Length: 358
Image (cartoon, helix red, strand yellow):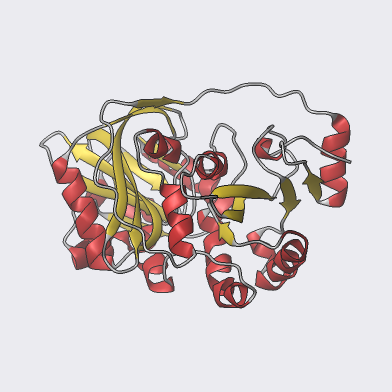
């Protein structure tokens, strides 16, 4: 019996030092057991490596930045859909999710499905609201304070103490060991991501992450925990190992059940030196290291696609422990004509084998 074939559009093709999840998501989709995938890339910049990687996308289109607003995005997606007949879109950036969530009803009318968090879930898990989130759901969260003026760092110095975390509302996080560093990081983050900037109490311990998938009804469809083995200066894991930790899995299931989480997610955790787990962040989408989950037996991109299409998906119950992912950089040789074609026309077409065509 032949498998169905779906056209799936994916964002987040920037496989750089702070990689987007798109390439890993696409790898999972191409390895799906229940369907064949035709991949449409959606990119913001001309130098996103995923645009040019062989055997990854069938066609890639440039889309407007989230700051352009939902009207421009809708116009562009309508054009792409008229050319490609998209079945599912998987957005992979925090900053773009609100726009896609807002457009979800219109896109559904066009026959395009997504599987995203609700507006309430998206807002209450935000870094600015994380302390209240922990109180509401009974999860340990280190004290966090949102500020809009570097002078406020002095006001909260005694509450937080040094070292402390300085975080952007969307991305970037730094450890500040003194007041000068804290002010510098505040200015750096505010210039890039705007206000507020979040100060968070530092937790001494070991970093753990969980990638998972909730079905919107309180059921955990997938969950794979990993311990970071190598971390870049931007806090990104470039190596990690799948682990067995029932306390961490129980916390994950409680999170999904109590919130009724809908869609992919990543929990960033810190296990303190006294053995307590603290929730540091909730990312409301699939993380860049999701291919580890695929590799240990839980294909989250495949399961998310099936949920988006309204199919019944049974929860994964097992995964392999002790498997590592190790990220690496490699150089691609790209024809200048391909780069120019994409930069000028806003799209790059490939044949069914993933090779560029005229």
